[in-house]
Image: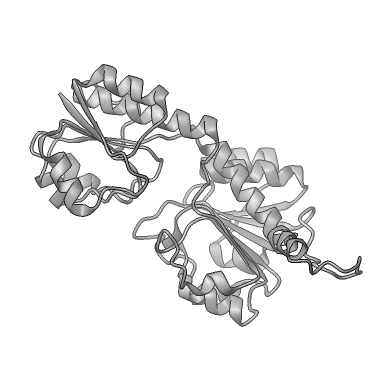
Length: 318
């Protein structure tokens, strides 16, 4: 039995893979395998452990006649054609649960950094621009007692609400399902998206990427937000119409944004977002703590080995 792993993983995970597969082929480079390399690598494997950067579509699956399992080292799986996998009898797994709190930590850190101009202030100091203490220098909005709108009250949205509750924020949420726990524990109020956008000082996105949520926040939605509001996105880049966001920020229709994800990743150096001073930009590091990334890799390895051996996946999709 052979497995292909599209990136070097922590040793704890690789031990599991090597123990469960007779032959393990690991892509050794920092950048992901290209399309042609991926087509070649999957030709004779029973198991594939992939990342969000690997597009696993019908063509890849057709090139892998022996494939039994696709194991994703992530919670989201919009890069995988899951129906095509299921129609071929290929199991698909992901790594839910373990990154929830770590990603919420990062989202709240983005909120704090953007509101209090942490990145801008640090750059200001390093450039030697700090001449004196000034009453209104680098001032931003308070977080405590402000209103936070959470779009998508799933597990990460719930943890975001927990953190906001510690700052005594008023919490609104828009979601496909009512979350009674968030309401009972944190006083969160379920509202429609338009009400959330028009009422919130901060809006944080925590939705999966699908046909319903793609460009969920576009020109119309951005126009509903307060000019003093800040938008945070640690979910998926295409949930926001990025060009509409750039225009809103340039024209002062929105105070700022904190983004960990983008329509195109990595973000091109020519992207206008990089020229805006009122944006904090991060390279998709929502789950990037040592413990969390290691646990994600272990879960992905366990899914991979189970699938190769014809056993139920510990964390299946669907």
